[in-house]
Amino acid sequence: WDYISKIKQSGNKELIIIQFQAANDEESVSYNTFYSYLNSRKRYGVVSNYSRKIKDFYIVPLAATSPVPTVLMPFDGPGLPSPRPHLLLGVIVRHKAKQAPQVCAPKNTVSKSNELSDGSYTPPFEPRSYTPPLPAVDEQPLGVESECSSSSNNCYDSKPSFHSSE
Image 1 (cartoon, helix red, strand yellow):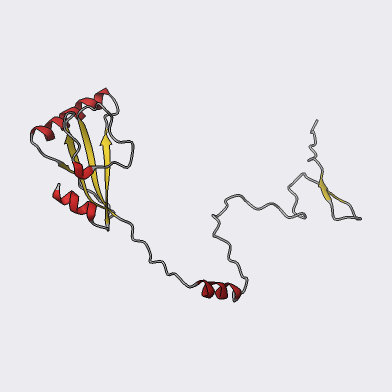
Image 2 (cartoon, rainbow, N blue to C red):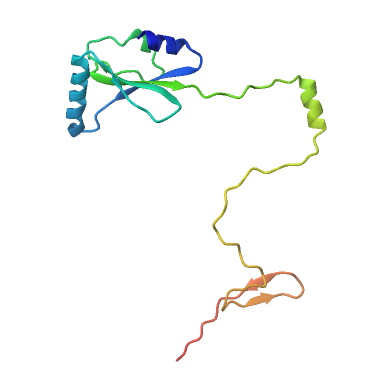
């Protein structure tokens, strides 16, 4: 637990605690077997990972009567049920996301830069639409006639005409 204590105090890593549960009766047998295996040997499970964001991942058996190790306390979530059964806890050591340093400028500099702005605006990127564009007014689909008023620019589409071959 010394290692976990040092990790918790470091500023560049965070500790995440998860509680494993069996999803159904079939998984409950495997869950209890794995718990018994780790607990009887006084061992922890080590999970290999393929993510650069996760440094370490351990599976820790916690007996129903055992206290939660103080280094894991306090929990930031719902905590553990009371009374609780034998549990398997996941202890994940995760690299904290690196944040870009924020540069603070004096207020008068900020307002000057706003005054000097050219007023241009670049809209945010919009995802591509896969809907075909609407046809232009002079490109009517087959069978659709367009009626335009010469006194205004209003155009109306009449319903397609269907011819019977009887």
